[in-house]
Structures are given as structure tokens and as C-alpha cells.
Length: 109
Image (cartoon, rainbow, N blue to C red; front, side, top):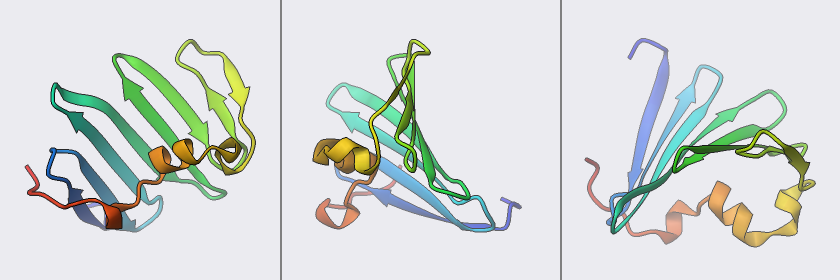
């Protein structure tokens, strides 16, 4: 690639994969969550000037979250605001910021 970024892959034994970039802005990450039936969700994170913006896709539906403001764009186009710190929901925080140190790495495909 000629975008002057460095890419890293983190892969788990179930086939899930996280690809991150560093270097020239914006920093990005793309995740693919897999289960026994194949891909169950994909998502992108883009490091904006103020905070990351997350976009998730599942079964043709898209959800967007601005981490700094807590603003959410739902799959039906409606909006909501969960507030800062993922609305205090640890499950959401774990979904948007997975702890790669706690996962067992596998082989990238």
C-alpha cells in the first residue's frame, strides 16, 4: 500500500480478525467478528481529531457511534445519545474496545 501507514493484524483462533493502521492520519481499524456460522459482524474505527468514530455492520444493518459525544445513528436512521463513556455500559465498551491481551491469538487468513 502507498498510503504511508503501517498495518498490524491481530487474529483469534475462531477466525476473528482486527486490522489496525498507524502512521499518517487518520488511524484506522477494521474488525471482523466470527462465530461457528461465519462472520457475524464487521466494523471500522476511524480516529478523528476529537475521538474515534465506530461503524458496525451486521446482517445488512449499520450502526454508527461517535465516542466523544455518545451520538448514535441507528440502523433505521434514527439517532440517540448514550452519553460519554459508552453510557456506563461495560458490555458496550468491551464491544467497541476489545482487550486483545485477553484473547488467544490464532493464525491470520
